Image 1 (cartoon, rainbow, N blue to C red):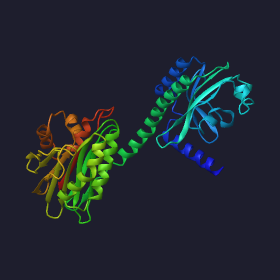
Image 2: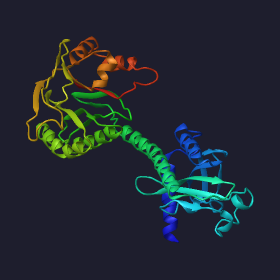
Image 3: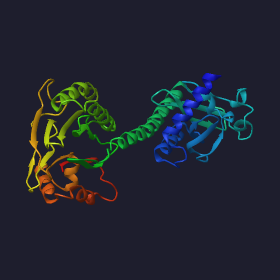
Image 4: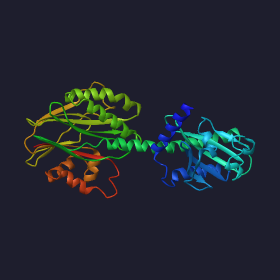
Length: 383
C-alpha cells in the first residue's frame, strides 16, 4: 500500500509540473482526441490526467472538457497503474466496473485506454475511447491506440521540458556588479530555443570575470547545453583564463558531439586594481575594446568553435590595459540583428555612438512583443 501511495504522490507532483491543468482548451491536445475519434469511429475520446483521487479531462471529443470526477469511478484510474493498454469489450461483464456510474448510469459498454508516461517513466494519465455499444478491439487497434498515446506523451513532455527550460533561462540572468575600479552589466534576453550563454562574477582574488558564448543545437537542446556550459564556466572562476578554456573544451566536447552541436565562448578577466584585462576566445569573435576617447576596436579571433576545432588546439588569448572609462563589450549574434547591423564592425559604430547609454539604447530597440530570439550584450568597464 505504501508503494502505491508513493507512486500516486509522484504522479501528482509530475502532473503539477506539467502546468497544463486548468489551462483551458489546447489545440495540440484537441487535435489528438479528434484524430483518435476519427481513427476508431467512437463517440467519446478522452485525454485524461490522473492525480491522487481525481481524473481530470484535459481534452475530449464528445464530452465536457475540464471536468473532474472521482478516480474510483473511472476506468482510467486502473489503466494508469499498468504499462500496457487496457481493453474492456463489454463493461457490464467486468466486475471491476459494472457497478460504476459510467456503466450503470451513463451506459458506457466499451472502453479501451492506453497509459501516458513522462520521460522518467511516471504514468500520469491515459488516452482512451468509449462507446455505448460493446465492441471488439483487434491487435492492430491496440497498436494504433498505443501510437496515438505516444503522440500525446510527446506533447506532455513538451510542456514539462518547456517549463524546465524557462527555469534554466531564468537562472542564466546574473545581477549587475559594481566594485571599486570596475563594473559589469548587460542586456540579456533569453529564449527557450536559444543557446546563448552569459555569466559574470567576482573571483576569490577580486577580479571581474565575464563570459559570453553560444550553443547551436536542435530545438531546446541548445538552451540546456548552454546551461551546462555556464555551470562549467562558473566552476572555473578561479582558474587562469587560457587554462579555463582548455578545461571547458575537454569537458563540453563529448556532450556537444553527442547532440550534434557546436559551441563558441569568449571569456574576459578584469583586474579592477590595475585595469589589466585578459581574454581567451574559443571561436566566438564577437567582442570590442571601446576606449573612453571614442575609439572602438573589434577583438578578433580565427579560432573555430567547440566541436569543430581539433582537440588540444591552443585558443586565441589577448590582453590590454584599460584606462578609466574604457570598456570591453561582449555580445551574441542576436545583438547584431537587434542593432540592425551585419557584423561586429557594424556594431562597433553603435558602441561608439553610445559611450554612456549603450544598453539603454539597445533596450529601446526591443520590440514590444519580444525579440523573437535570444541575445546578449555585456559591458565590462574600468571605473
